[in-house]
Image 1: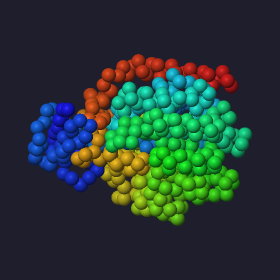
Image 2: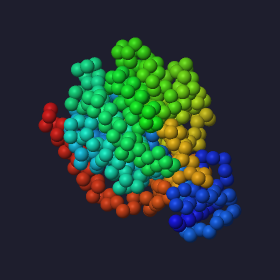
Image 3: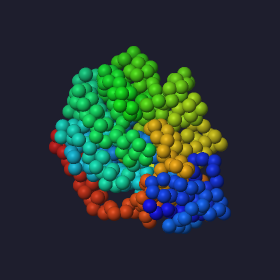
Image 4: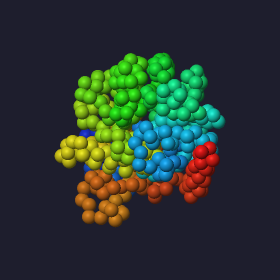
Length: 454
């Protein structure tokens, strides 16, 4: 195993209080030493990487996404709509997904995130029409090919529109099929060791697309199998009204009723909580993935990050779907989180350090990981390195602040589990031009299929 010293970075954010201005030493898949300013490594180093032109961060961690939606960015019929109407427009389109589309969408999403400094990506895939029963298997295959760390959630929809739910019937599955496949995926792919590259979580789409029985059964399986659970919750007022009308509960009360109010749960969005609910969520050690760009695009509202964190909630960051964001850029999402939260709390009360925390150890903790998210001895060597040599950074003074405030959008180097995956801004070993050609054709084919079905 080579020992690599990332030496004397221009700036470094570790997520800890330790002085790391001399850099980071990596051996194998882990960080083995943090170097103070002016110091040298205490052990032999095989390779020295001059980081004096780089801002160094823990690899960014995306806590919520829908990879398949890279195929429907800026889809004309879905423009200028809020969540429920937006979903109803796109569900019939997404029903046409096939295996090739799924693989290409997953690869584009992962590559786009990796190029933006992301080293761990979670995906919430809940749409499994006939012919796409092995969607999660395809995602595992792509993540392994790219050497990307992934937390893939076996999503589900079982409550069709003819039974009072939101999705059309051709996009849902029976509950027995969902349960059986959830157990299969956990047993085939879920890695439990420190440094796990592939993990499986269970993720009913939302209260308005699955039954109460499925929510309860998912909680039972997750407890027995010791895996995480995930869902959308409190994204919009419409969802709150749906829960009150159908179940007689506000969403958080419903969550408790079905056995989800515990430390195995992380939620997407989490916008419309009242003060009492925030205290309950903190006491239960719930995780929340803040999705700022999506929340702005769909006009859903602003997550109450500071109150949630103060209550003990583990707040992370997600880009959400590439059709409710129209991008999968993780460093760009850090900037959006900073500015949207300032809109709620003011400029003096939200800093770039807050936004970086949400995008690193916040996301890791929300998804039940303690081996990633910081640069510290014994942690996984997941590292993103950014240069400040573009015109957008000219005249900047604080390098770490400039990375966020001036709008960085791509990493120069990315290391995952001690292995370089991005160099000079490009994913190593990837024919990006060919991938994009195939992906664009798949997006066109999906749109044509939807048009033909009327």
